[in-house]
Amino acid sequence: MANLETTYLGLKLKNPLVAASSGITSSVEKIKKLEQAGIGAVVLKSVFEEQINNEVTSMLLQDSHNAGYPEAEDYIRHYLRDNTVVKHIKLIEEVKKSVNIPVIASVNCVSASEWTTFAKDFEEAGADALELNIFYLPVDKHEEAGAVEQLYLNVLEKVRKEVSIPVSVKIGLYHSNIVGMVDKLKAGGAKGVVMFNRFYEPDIDLEKLELTSSEVFSSPEEIRHTLRWVGLVASEVPDIDIAASTGIHDGQSVIKQILAGAKVAQLCSTLYKNGNEVLPSMIAEMETFMKKWNFKRLEDFRGRLSYKSIPDPMVYERSQFMKYFSSRGK
Image 1 (cartoon, helix red, strand yellow):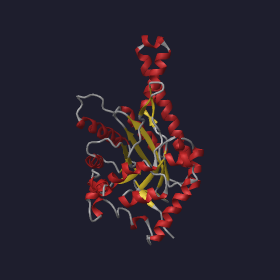
Image 2 (cartoon, rainbow, N blue to C red):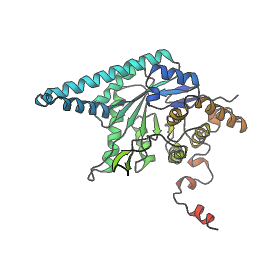
Image 3 (cartoon, rainbow, N blue to C red):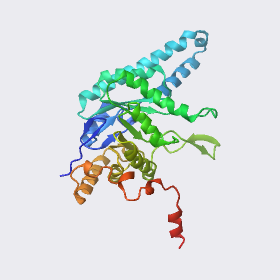
Image 4 (spheres, rainbow, N blue to C red):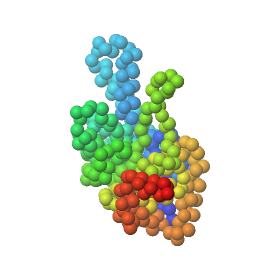
């Protein structure tokens, strides 16, 4: 029988399926149902720095009297921060008592501010690891690219000083040198990297001439955004665990990411669209694939088709469609 066990961030998982940070992992009951359906690990819904900041601004605007008291903002900010963290600590403690799968806490950072030290509280609450969900959107044309990268490294450095549990960093696709960025994160102490984050993206409503939100869920086709980079990073930055994310909707997608070199696959959109029922079918697809190729465990084929493991690595580097369109035109 196929053995689907794997390790991620030094944690033992019964299979490589990880529920990504989202509303699906926001309560004990939801996580218990995920475990029953077969999930290998969960990343708890993030604590959002941006959301805390927005709530502070909203409360200040609701009461004009606050403007006359400079200490009002500090009081409100600390109250909201402390209240949010206390709730998250309680969630971690309750989840750890209720399930037998690894529980990874998540912090959504938009800066390297002091509040990231709350990671220590999450560690003490029992989190098995910590995922830093970092995103910074540079809009200043004078800001250097190196300064943007340094912000990520600064957040990682601050958190690493506060915790001893493994830390992974969830990054976006929009780095000028993804391989180099992951290498720097590894040097900074990251044990893993999640590739890639899926951000809010705007759209335009032509009927109302208004900005609106684009589709929030990924499509299966979006696996192409991650597959190339998983294969490259797995070869060029060894000894860092890769969690593939975005566009993973079935067992075949998970298999492809493992073949490229991923340790685990993070699932979100498929769980929203198809429910927990998709998990047993994904596990069955992996087992069928392994039986077909006589693979006994995941390590038998992990990275088999990564950048340096294939006869023609240029397949990963190719960026043009010349060969495809030249053959189609005949």
